View 1 (cartoon, one colour):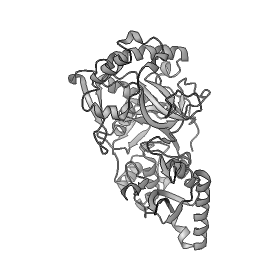
View 2 (cartoon, rainbow, N blue to C red; view 1 turned 180 degrees about the vertical axis):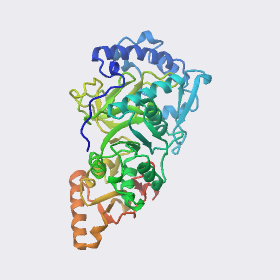
View 3 (cartoon, helix red, strand yellow; view 1 turned 180 degrees about the horizontal axis):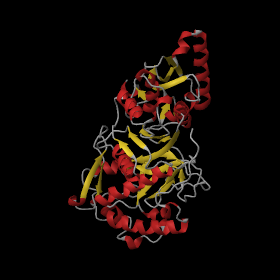
View 4 (cartoon, rainbow, N blue to C red; view 1 turned 120 degrees about the vertical axis):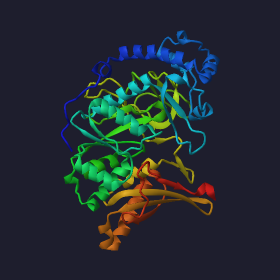
Length: 440
């Protein structure tokens, strides 16, 4: 991996602001956000019921606790315009979720909203040491999904040369990476691993590419996966965090020290709460991430429950940024699997299998019923050479993975080992879990 570059700032005044001044700024912007929220039909009723009739009822950040939580179900019930706080004439862009599980959620943006969002992404990119000399290939999907456009605008603002190819067409992706000497990628971790497996087929090696950084996102992944990508490509990989309800990418990003994602607290109030009791949790304690927007006018959101699980790192970062650092996402309150009464997160399984050297670039978790019991099957691709040697080694490897998984999740899983290319490949978000139990 490359040597850590000099620490760079996009907006040093805000990135290194002292904590007392930051809290004053948050109170000021929270008041403005409450004023915007009261213009929406949804929050007007909800806030008045909570005794908040205007910004004057917000005096300190402690008053945030008076405000009820907002959920994804609330956003669906408000579709299409219940959370719009400005006239439609002021809106320049609309993003919605896919709506595959029902009514989609919608976020409106004014021109100023998009400008502020772009600035946060530019800040994030600069924090990783990237800049005007870089060639940025954006492999995230464009359209209603916020990931593609969000990083695109931010990269252009920084002055990077942008290749807006979007997702898919692996052979062309690799050809463009080679021809234009791409230095930075925005890509899902599963597709990044797939790119590596296909580079040789396209007539290139990793050494033929000019890559030096990658921003991974859109799907959860483990630290072992990050290290694997860094090792395979000899690059630096940065964790990032965003969600469409908070604009998209640019909510939190790692700096060059890669010791937690700086959450831009001048734009968002970050809370970590107990998913069951809703009590606020201190540093290093894992809980659900809750966000309040501070600078978006068209669609203000107050205390939005993300369902993502993480914790806040204690201490200061060597880059001197004062914004608190969010851990990697450890799971979601709504993706937890209950297997024969045991709580399991897919990220726990990935953490185990990705530290096994023989494991390739793809895996899948399958759940099915065997009589009255749940059956957990973990399908893993391993390197082809394993199948050309002593097949007894495959059985030994299978038992090794099974034992290490049992130590991590207290469940005996069935391990299936496959050659590369057997399991489905996803160019967008990977579908790692196949659960057929509810269909029986």
